[in-house]
Length: 113
Length: 113
Picture 1 (cartoon, rainbow over the protein chains, first blue to last red):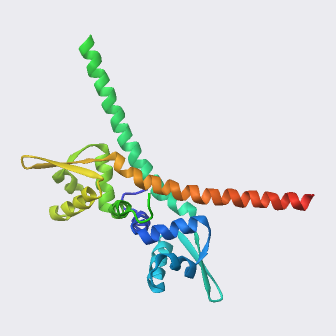
Picture 2 (picture 1 turned 180 degrees about the vertical axis):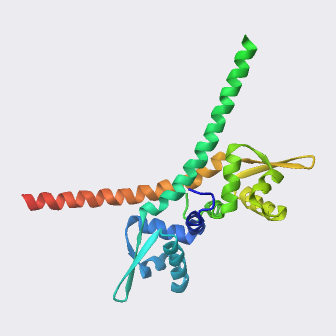
Picture 3 (picture 1 turned 90 degrees about the vertical axis):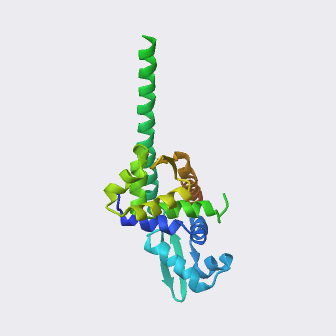
């Protein structure tokens, strides 16, 4: 995982919008047609289609067309790189806190002897 | 946690840029001066300052000034809402998969009796 992973930028950008997050939550429950996804948002269909494009480009959803009906489905494993990145940051600062703890313990021991 | 949480949008937007992610990784290791953060990026100081503003606005870092030296530090707990949101999505689709499993098991049992 490099620092300049363009995939991560696409993923985090995709989640930086409340409409896109609400669409993902809906799709986590079940696949849905584009028209059904659009309805609760109160947005015009072209606007919703643009949001779906961002999600599809990031790989968070896939769409399929059956006749005139386009259906969207979530791709659960696509969320993994974000979780991994967050875990990596946590590991770094936890290691730092552990070193600080060890240092304080050492100072306290030195003071006591 | 509402669907239209503006805090989440700020947080995910803050992580949607490779320079900002690399600054956070650096700060996860230790607090650092703005000039030291700017150096490895190869970017001009005003550009780096803009990235730092985005991170500070999202609450992911805090900055403090001592004379002419501004220092930045990461705020580990600020990452929690993103992790919580990702966990919530996973819980929703895992519940769905469990229901699907149960349904398939039921069908198989019915076929066997």
